[in-house]
Image: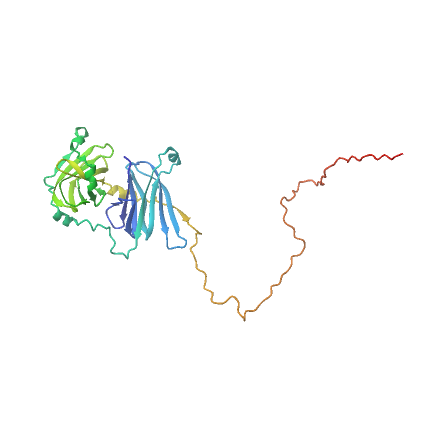
Length: 370
């Protein structure tokens, strides 16, 4: 399974935050960015562009470079740099043009809207989801009685008997929304899944929250857990805690969480990803010193120079006091000819013009009468 995950870290923070969507908003400041992908030991063309709207005409500053992912699929996008307010776009794509002809080219991008620092009240809009303390009070999830089955041998796992049955009609009525779709953590740590349950027709619902973790390389099930969900009216927030295994052969886990009824029918589902043990490796690759960009300026439309308004003119064009100075016209001396299209060479011999030859006209003979 192919995947690409952008991660960003602000200067002074200790954690890397995954960018879950292709468009996001952050506050201005110094950031660095890295990526984790399934394309290991692969050449990548990195382009970081900034739209400069404070100039007229607007300009797009583009910085690009070539890089190679390591054997773990890690790539440093850019080191700590100042992201000023405006629109930023980061593109990573395959640099080989042959891939385009073979239909094997790939492209991943993320757009960032950088907000100015004077907007102190800016934060992600999660007003519809309560805090973790409120969630714990609103929903009493029986984590002590959770059924935890760690799958160590994929050959002994019968996913078809444990996975809930998907009901498309029920899923159209009930929705399960996660607060976060991408997580970065360590082995053996706990993972908190927070979100809310929605229903278009309202009413109450009861059942279980079923969580499954899978290996993306082998598609085998790593872990399954179920959490009892008391009957309550919707919309309603939820909060469950999953303990990750102590040992794993993969650094990325694919997760799924579903709301199932007593008949093991999935009423709603959502997916997420978990990235394991990348903090130290990300710090190592992001601190590389050879992250220089080739700077390139793309302009649209107009010139590269910023617009400079002309000086204000207060005087009139002509007044009664304006002196009229006649302009003296001096003719050029000699005969001026246009330049020759093909000047003669120094080695060319003198030649006389050749005139065409015409045949003599036939004159009629005149005979005199006797």
